[in-house]
Length: 229
Image (tube, rainbow, N blue to C red; front, side, top):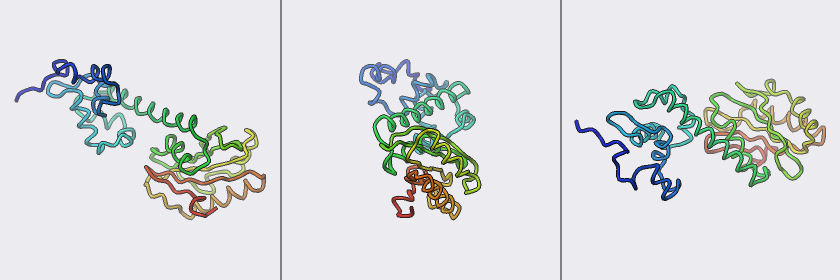
């Protein structure tokens, strides 16, 4: 069987590194960008082809790639521990940049903006996580706090701690978010009960409970937008 040429022997304009330097990163495919990270493939397959195989397994979805574990990546021939860690580190940097972009460019006054921020933090978790966002009157983020994980109910989230933290950081607006790992964003009875308790706790101290957002992958449920607050 004829071996494929190493990237070293490709025409210079086709090599990912040279292509990035000459044309810019935006002109490279996802597989080419990832190939730059891992550097090499193996005897029969170049780095670009290795990453194409990985992306095919993820249905070419970078969010799915970011959810993979090092062990899952290392199951692909040509990817060892160092390469797997490099890929995961790059995915994490992408998430952090996305979160920073939301904070720099937007106020968190809409369900869409809140979702984009929360998804960067809890959207890819394999168990339920609760996230409280504390905002000022201009809907700018003061502080984000993860309060619970592993099953979100009115007993798992202490409403007293939620409102206490709002007072300590001088917030006037409170948002609660949690993820549904099943990607079914319809609220449960426990979600409804928790929402009522959070709103009552905020109302008592004259805090504005803006929303409860259920975070899915590429979709969300907003209690306020659905008229349930």
